[in-house]
Structure formats: structure tokens, C-alpha cells
Length: 145
Image (cartoon, rainbow, N blue to C red; front, side, top):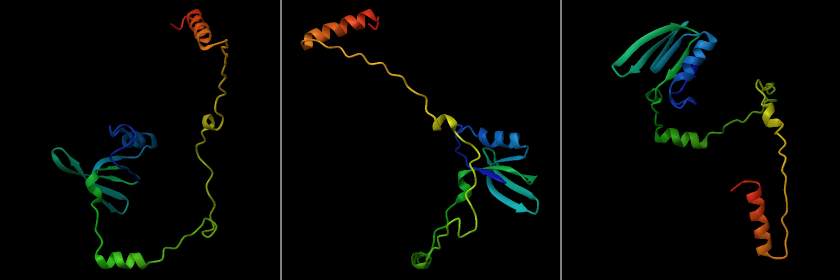
């Protein structure tokens, strides 16, 4: 199951989940406000302008969810106190007997930035007025102005 939020990198158009589903060949269930998994199928209650609509598909599926799917659950005072006293274990990859996977995508254009050639010409003169005149002549000769 691949789950997308509502805001994606397609400027909020909502096309990324549908395009992903099309590319990998899985069914797409969009605008999910409630998700129920039963065995090998998924039932989704879609939140649409007209109200709610129930749709289902067999797994694997691509889902896009609406903001209301993750209503926060607020902890109790006792829960907060217990959490503050809890010790959280930290494991490294070697503790788990795993290694970091090799990158799937490499960005070679970022690893070898293009060489930028710069040409600099120093304009010299006896005083600032002479340097300014030479600079103005150079600018006019190059047709910058």
C-alpha cells in the first residue's frame, strides 16, 4: 500500500498519486477520509464535495488521504508523565544486524558541477576619472549600452 497526503509536489493538483498508480499498475483510491483493511482488500470512505462515497479495491493499492484522516489524539496528564520518565532505546544499524542500502538514484550532475570559465579584465589609469572614461569607452565598444 502506498499512501500519499493531499499536498504533493505537483502544486496541490493531486496528480502525483494517480500518476504513481498508473505507472505501477495498481488501483487508485483517492481522497480517503477513512480506511479499512480486510484481508486482501481495502475499503475507503472518500470525502467529496457531494458528501461521502465508499469504494473498495484489492491490494496492492495507492491511496491519497485528506487532512481529516489524522485527527490527533491528545494524551492524558498521566500519559505525559509516564512518557517523560520513559527511556527510549537507540539502536544503530550494526545493533540490528543491517547495513545501509545502496542509493537507488544518484545525481551525477550534482557530484560534478560544471566548470565556470570567467574572464576578468582590469581597467587601470592615473585617476578615477581616467578609469571611468576607459570603462565607459569599453562599455560602448561592447554595445552593452
